[in-house]
Image (tube, rainbow over all chains, first blue to last red; front, side):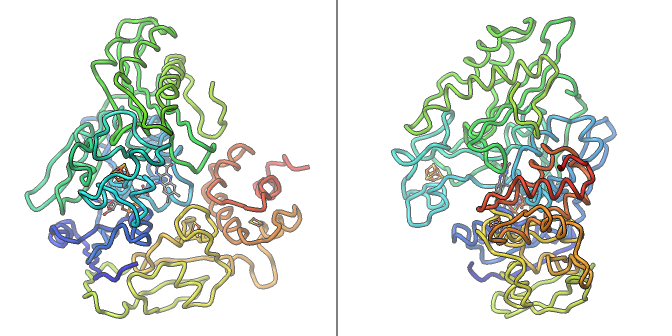
Length: 337
Length: 169
Ligand SMILES: Cc1cc2nc3c(=O)[nH]c(=O)nc-3n(C[C@H](O)[C@H](O)[C@H](O)COP(=O)(O)OP(=O)(O)OC[C@H]3O[C@@H](n4cnc5c(N)ncnc54)[C@H](O)[C@@H]3O)c2cc1C
Ligand code: SF4
Ligand code: FES
Ligand code: FES
């Protein structure tokens, strides 16, 4: 690990001043940043430890929504009574990720900003446009089992590895940030970005901006929801593909269906136009299959990950069936109903 | 907890932090890039906590910080200034083993023993969380600890016994 200077501010204004653009990184739980520093992928000149900022709480919003502090841990968030009762999709997705130990350290702000698990991104001996713009992409034509099948570019085919963010996408969450220019609220759909020609940018956070909270709207998907995660082993592994569904069913017909995909793109993948093919439909395999194809239109693999195209479509059909039936995927009994 | 704003230049050798380690209050000089795992093992001589992967992927380095289990290999010590740390060395009371330690012996829940300190601290954390009740839940909630010897079934039995679920024969 490289040497760095260290600051530990105790209020947000100081932190943002410290985080001014340059080789500065905010340190939250450290479960991603410290890992990448050990690999020499991240070599910050300065670490701004944000753990003493007052952003640890989870608070009710006046409109009935919920505000998740950026420094609330993933574990405290998933096990918060209000999250369990009002946003069980989010609780389920968080519990599907990482391990109990990691979730105790990982924060909501850190989860949002975690970097890709692309092997080449991690290996400084290989080319990677995300790590070193212009150096090339080792994964294209290389080992790419875990890579993207949607929204990739000629410069980068990495995926965003988060489970939590897939649920946030289905729940239409809003990311609250503070920077030198003041505060902003960014809809989750606009937070992460596609790689395009500039894969070095994972998201639309400006350099030095600090995530302060994630707001969940006052819309409850407590009956018809599921988080289905498929991976190489049943726990403590990143998703090959995952599907978050938030649905409403009234008098036997689907009135709303939100579908977000993980493990397939540089950001949680949603196609609202494709979701609407389900509106007014009665739940059926055919309707689900049509939606699965509409959402994954244009999906294609890069060799080792070709299997993901078929897998994600089947997973979508399964997840929609689970949500429609009101039988969400259990994160402990691993059988997929 | 020390909430004072701290600022050090890159050439500073060490920052003094306060930690309570297994009940003992300590003032320790640490370089800011030192992980809690390296601090415990190299500086404090507490080698019970193991380094398996050093990347959050195995759980051998699991310790309890303020009662919660975390991977000490991905924790910068300086970021936990003021915390209470409990390691495997702090589980027994004198010669009286922690019930989990006894259960691990009774159930033959290890072979080489390398993962065991992490398994034990993780299981202490699991008991405190109070979420896992069934065998499936214990398996899932212990999945952050890899055992290369494959002692999983016996580890699960040991944890279940202490949980008092009675599903152990
Ligand atoms: C072995 C292993 C397995 C894992 N498995 C999964 C999995 O299955 N699913 C999953 O979703 N995740 C998984 N993770 C990733 C884990 O969820 C993330 O590492 C964690 O959420 C990051 O949070 P943190 O607080 O530790 O962030 P840090 O490591 O402290 O920070 C990560 C990044 O975010 C930035 N950052 C942190 N907080 C803020 C903020 N408030 N504002 C702006 N920037 C900020 C940091 O500067 C840094 O760049 C796994 C991790 C490991 C090591
Ligand atoms: S896929 Fe993206 S992150 Fe991976 S090597 Fe290519 S450019 Fe780098
Ligand atoms: S040594 Fe920390 S998880 Fe492996
Ligand atoms: S007992 Fe050998 S690794 Fe678990």
